[in-house]
Image (cartoon, rainbow, N blue to C red; front, side, top):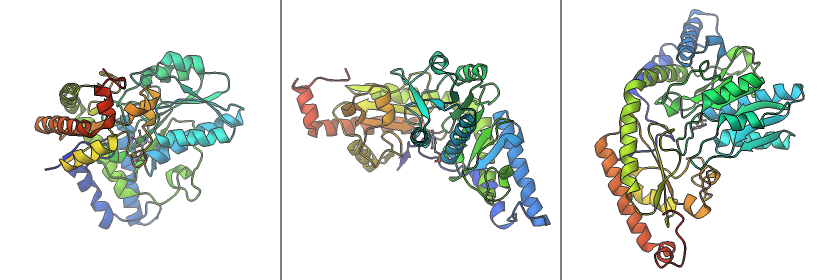
Length: 396
Ligand SMILES: *Cc1c(COP(=O)(O)O)cnc(C)c1O
C-alpha cells in the first residue's frame, strides 16, 4: 500500500481532467491559428477554455494568458512589472523571503540588473501584514509580489488587504497563487490582484500548463518571441489538450471547495494533533491561516532526508521542504525565514493531503512517523547529547 502525501509537489490527475484532454490529441488536433475548419474547431475550444478559466477567477477572458506553468507565469509577471516600472524610473520591488524560487531567483536577477528588493520581515508563524507592505512602499516602488499560500508551510497571507494597500498606492500587485487556486477561494477582483500565477498540476490537472492573469491595461512583456498566440505575449502553438485538462480540473476543484475544504481541514488537524504528541516536535506555520491540506513539522535531533527515505520504505510519500530544494542538503529557505535554526530546519517534514485522503491513511501516517522518528533518534548522536543535557533543546 502506498499513501501519497506530497500533493504540494504535484497531484494525481483527476479522471474528469483526463477525459477532457483526450479529444484534443487525435480528434480536435488542428492548430488554433489555422484558418481551416480543423483549426477553427481548436480555436473555439481554446476560446471557451479561456472564458471558463476567467469565470472561475473573476476575470475576463482577455486577461487570461496560458503559459507552461507556474514558474513561467511568475517570471513573466515580475519581469513585466520591472520593465514597466523602469520606464518610469521606478526600480524598487517589495517581496518576502518565503517566496517560491521562481519568484526569488527572478528577483535576484533583477537585483543584479540594478533593481532594489525589500524582503519583508516574516512573523514566526510565516505571516506578513498589509501594514508592513504599506510602510515599505516608496515613490520608487513598481511591484509588490507576495505569494497567496506557501508551498512548504501552507501559510495563507492577507492577500486582499495587501492588494488594497497596493491599489491605493498605485503599485502593481502580483501573487503566486499556485498553491491557493483550486484549494481555497480566489477572486482577482475581490482580492485586489493585478497579476496572478497558477499551475494546473497542483489541482489535479496536467503538468506543464498554467495561467498568468494580467489585469486589463497591463501590457505584458514577452519572455519568448514568436507568433501571435496569446495576443502576441506568449508565442508558441498552444498546448490545447493541457489547457482543456487544466480548465476541467479547475472547475471541478472549485465546484467542490465547500465540501473538500472542511473535510480536509479536519484531516489536517487530526494529523497535526497526532504528530504533536511526538516529543520535541513543532508545527511550522500558522495553525489556522493555513491551507486545508498542509501539515509541516520539525522534529528535533532528526535528519529530514533519512526521515523521508524511511517513511518511503513504509509506503508514505512525503517531502522535506519543497521538491525544488530537496536533493540539495540546504535547509529550507522558508523555515529559515520564519526563524527556525539550521539544525531544526533540517529535520522538517511536509505532508500534504488531497481530497482523496482518508482518515485511515492519516492514522497510518501518524504511526509511521512516530516509529521512524523514534528509530532515528535512537541512532542519533545529536539526540543522545540532547538527552544527556550536553546540548540544549530548541523545541520544548
Ligand atoms: C509548484 C509551484 C510553482 C511552480 O509551478 P510549475 O507549474 O511547477 O512551474 C510556483 N510556485 C509555487 C508556490 C508552487 O507551489
